Image 1 (tube, helix red, strand yellow):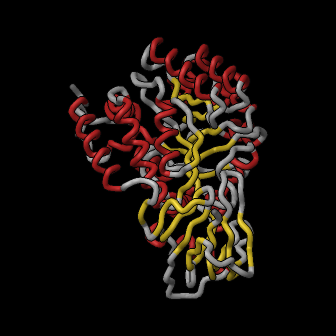
Image 2 (image 1 turned 90 degrees about the horizontal axis):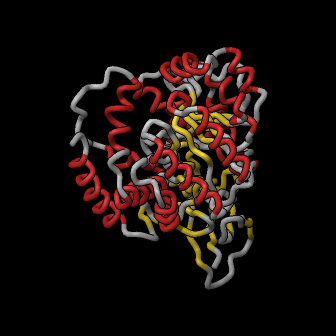
Length: 421
């Protein structure tokens, strides 16, 4: 049954044209919306008088596996640099995950994504010693909440041959099942040539792409240069990673001028994660001489894309003299990536309803100012995904929020007891 939005002030996400109208929202992952004059009697109607309606949001790089880390115990050794933070925090955590913890992480992340207006999630998963079936667990949890997704497993040589082979099998099994996925890699400095070759072969065989952390910290480039006598970008180019239009390179902070030339001439996309970069003290992104194929992610810091966009604006003011229009363009670029690569689940019937009580007028001419300095996730009242109302009056409709949070708390305590033991 279609949902009708009555008296909505619709903001076209591409043109930013404003129009007061009635919207018929059709169900289905590839369905759309229609603007209608009359609403049939006995229809499913949501009164949107005085509210703004626009396309919902997409997260270009998430780490669902980190959801239970909030408030986790401090490691026995305080990390002195980025590599030690990986070793003592994130690689310690991902090794301890089990199926129930992965499920709890996905449900909790899905809950927060939905309430923040994010209806499509591109995730980069890591659970090297509990990887079998992990992508289906995540997919099932996000499906139940009502979110679309593009998943992968973070392949690496860092945990030994058995973990690597299981990760490759999980990746292939998931892609073979015709579900939307990419071939994930951790980063160049933890991926040997043989694994890189196998990852590219999988991407070729299943018409996919690579999703990899790239030049996030200087250590990635230093180790890569020493071991392979190439920069990270040169190495990825040499192995064919940059040939795929579905490839996503996360971060790309420490790249040189020649790397930028290579990237500009390739069809790949770069995902910028501003708050994660600040948190890890790895540097600031600069788009100098790169193409426009840039969008935003959260890197597992949270599930609020409006927050990420604002952070990108404030950090980019000095690093690349960014303007609000560019921030908004990159914010919406994830939809372009999904559409150009024929991924499903991000059609026009994915919408957010904003109860934005601005003290000043809102229109096409000043929208960017409201996007950066006004609108935030607290203004999201309801969310529609695939034509279905998944958040109504700030509450999840498909699952019980309290049950999700109780389960995630239980699993986080279980995880924390296993850490550093």
